[in-house]
Image (cartoon, rainbow, N blue to C red; front, side, top):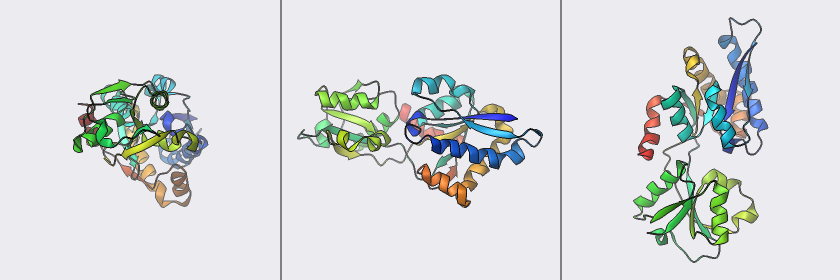
Length: 249
């Protein structure tokens, strides 16, 4: 049997990873007639879950299909010739600007202030772009290893302000969210996660893309996408990575 390995950004598998096993099963059933027509033993897509980003990054280059965050998508395209295939039409990587719950602060107070964030994540640049549009420019970014570390720095009083990945903030417990106060939320709609196909499968690109785009039109496919918070999948072209490049400059 011919196997493809599918990997998914750990942020998207932290809760209910079984949804992605179902997604992989759908692809196995709907790609097999064309993908493995020469393979009488069959075809399958196997979801390989990563426990953390270190594990994900060490293995992603060997995967056949990847649902990657923006910076990983750009890395896969530029360094390993992966091909952008599709993205969710309703999901974007956005940021939430926070301070401590009891802090008497406004967004404008971030001007020339120190801000805790995960500097390696592109959503930090999304936040800075949004702040610049409001004439707010932090004095410095204080690097944190994880989004939780950003929250902890605010808990401890080490930082007055923080930038969080919106999906991380949404996934926090209600108790944790009570410890911080939201000052603003970006609505840039500029970068997003996307499906990337390994270069050795270039001849299968059209079939893989069409299978993904057709999911929302089938009863089972639509249910699977809904469970993943996706309304539908849209075709993505290499030029769409330019928005990511622009943010990194």
